[in-house]
Length: 320
Ligand code: SF4
Ligand code: MG
Image (cartoon, rainbow, N blue to C red):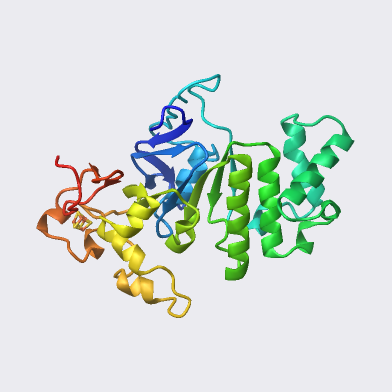
């Protein structure tokens, strides 16, 4: 990692959470997750629903506490924030559910400004709210309206303004465009890229959609059943995917004309994380699995040219 970059690293061995309110049943949602997000860059976490990517997002922002093991943040390389995690804010998939319907938009955005003491006095706060609304492509007058008066895309703009209100360095975005129409998705992604450039933001971008991620992410980590199975720079991952799961995800980039094709190609639903397969967790769905795959879990190995991959049969890797 570039010494001059502030880095953010998460390691979460043996994390688990209770499911279905059954006291003795635990779902090990994610395990041994470790990644680096360089300052000013975008790392995408990609995988099917249930792979644990939202859990990672919530751990990073402190919405979940690990019930076993620990979250560890690598020391920033220099300066007063050495060893501290970056200030992170989260943007959720469903802006309808994450905005309080009884609050005016202006109050929703003003709350973090007050809470963090970033502006003093009603006038200064109001001016900052107006500025944030304009930053996300809305107008100052929108502060007086309620969330229900806005479209889905506009509500996501409001969520982004609220996230920016606390002046974070780091934004964790969990499927921020998945609930939106395709044309609106592109507008929100463009806005997020523009804000990244202008404000020097760092993103952890969670998605099930590699097509969305391709234009956002500098680097991509692919998750399967709670583990990162491959990680590489975006162009390297697209041009030379080493893990069979990544290869299948690339073949099945969601196609509006054949929405069910991906599940078929992939060999059905992923197994339950409550009862993960022995050996390589992907072996029941893997088109090239051999006998060793159902016995031994593959170690993470370094990809040639950077990144990592966990597959016994990966070819472009450094020798063990
Ligand atoms: Fe497929 Fe075996 Fe590689 Fe797992 S280790 S992805 S089952 S080839
Ligand atoms: Mg999710």
